[in-house]
Image: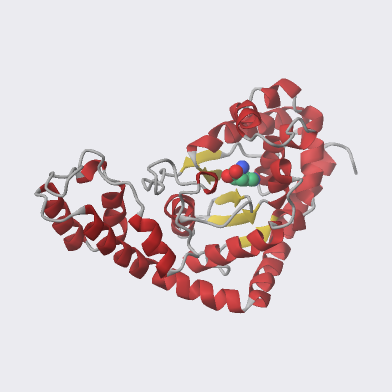
Length: 328
Ligand code: TRP
């Protein structure tokens, strides 16, 4: 039986950190077992908010693909490609724009939120309003059955379903209504206990060297109720303990938990311990990163293969769409 198809994307607006790794990336890697996967670098989407800061887009694109491959996305199994290299996405987005009522776009929650949050730039643009419409085209052009995303993206998938339904109603059944495959949120917080994010300057990046990791970990907030070394700690509310649970061996995690609760280990020592296990856990990823970084031509070649595979599917869909809309 044909495996079901999924598509997901990431915008190249920065380097990937542990939040991306434990949230999206490892989920994408796992999904390769059960689905035919299309994984895309959404560079046009990056432009919707960063059209004035185009400088690093290509650099971030390459770096992101390197992290994807190093994490275990297998280009033999999955199609890895750059959105802007498959022009059919733009053609479909244009056509979907004909039948998408403006209020559907205006009521998307991320639209108003981001307008307010992303200060210092003018987002009263056509491209920014059309963000979820372009995303709908990304998904529909591969007739994806499901889309693995975080909860913040759920309204965009819901909108995609509505657009697909409206298209099918006018022009005939071409598109499946894609399901949202909600990825579990990463439990890891940033160094300051807020959500890990580039804009909070609280992230540990997949490309950070061991020394940078040690330094960052030493600044992590622990259990706020533990003021003195002799106070018993509460590992269940401590972000450092969350890291232990993910990156340290089970016996070490059990040991620090016991010692913390009994005030037998201080936070400084505990953080030092955790940093070493984190560095060890990331070492294989970083070794693969180093290999790929040395050979960018190989990475661009993988993207070229991905472009070809993606284009075949996208063009097939567009062929059906053009016929259905009497454009040929
Ligand atoms: N909007 C997504 C994000 O910011 C990125 C994205 C673009 C995407 N196109 C997509 C995700 C299609 C899933 C499907 O994370």
